[in-house]
Length: 255
Image 1 (cartoon, rainbow, N blue to C red):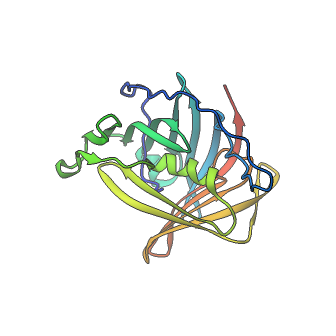
Image 2 (tube, rainbow, N blue to C red):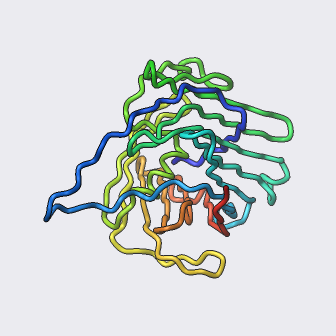
């Protein structure tokens, strides 16, 4: 995920839910290797402190909300509270409405809002899986309005965060296609073999470190831990310097 100044919109566009009939699953034969099922999505709200260059700039909240089944919404809100960002009143919000399609998270709509004292910019993306195309409106360049042809497994940045939590295993390579804000990119994360020790709210966690290097000048690192529904830490670096660093303070399950 590229942590941009992000977006949150509670009123997103409706979608046509895709329902599939459940199919019987055959029992595994003796001797078969049965992988543990991926953890199920559960609603949560998580609080972060936001740093840049080692200095605290503000706070962030990430939450996963259960909507009309099978629909979910994931939100990330960043608020500047210190330094120049706080004085400028910058707020960044992002929200994705999605549903589970097999083992993937399929986006339906995406809203992004960047606000300062004097400006407010918003973009809205609609993912139409019946026509397998996505379009964007609002403050987005004309050549990035779409349509963009959708492929199975396409996700927004927020959904890729959830997918990394679901898929990470020590030593694994994770591959996703990012489709957001009128752009497509291949995101490849490499999970370190060794676990990192991280403290959150007085509790210690053994976290997996997943790194995505876009090029020599840009890097995104996500730390995730088993049985924790939200990233422990999200760090973005550019030209060798930390640009945004979200560190988990606490989280809780909600309904």
